[in-house]
Length: 354
Ligand code: KDG
Image (cartoon, rainbow, N blue to C red; front, side, top):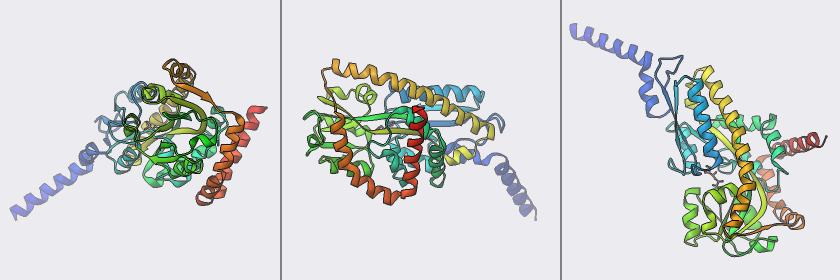
């Protein structure tokens, strides 16, 4: 009797404990803490990882986000930042968010298409005519609709940041026309549309995590790659590449992702704080990135890279060559979804032209 009574008391105690904070243990293992300023007072920790290095506008803006979140939550949320693929590659980190073993990552839309196939539309070559139109579409209704699609994947999209217009570098030749892609071993992000588009252009593309890229170029495993100018300069690609050609073939948005489990564990006020801070720091990311493009293009020339722009005719030829690939993906993604994006782009262009 006495024994059962003490067991009951014990069970009661465990239940009471679980009710008022047991989750923390679980939380501390993976998805942050339940408490926070309004809650139990325990600090919640966010591990935020990216692939690019600590001099890239993406990381500088992430540090700004950290500052805003820690200030506005009076330290109830602490942010640990990791750069240079320290926590893994884009796909691995996104999976870690789904599992709740990491809280934040900011990949390009290309790897996200492996989780939400509709995101491939954002990587349609030559889709966005310029950054202003991209901002209007991504920060508008269509952009929000795509962020909402992430919830089914246990992810929350807080904002769009900018990777930028992607250009091609390689160690073989200048890309003047589509024919210059012939047989070029090109690294691409892990995205089937990128692979199919570069195959259609005659290149020999291979998907690879960002963290492996520099070594692959150094060892000649690949002849080249494609990324925006700030990445080409700040990651030191000019040390292992001779040619940079401003194809501007894809405008690459970043998506600021948070683990849904962690986000749902925040108070409403904290959810607003992390989201508003992601939008504000995103504006800084875009500003720094656009300044960096102009500045670092000159730096690449100064570093001895052979720098060429492509003509509108050459770009039109590339658009024509990849169009059948886009038609195929539009079928897969859903023509309505693709048309919605095209309509939003046309509306933004019209508004800017007024
Ligand atoms: O931090 C983001 C990077 O991991 C990645 O998205 C960079 O554009 C990129 C690439 O080519 O992998």
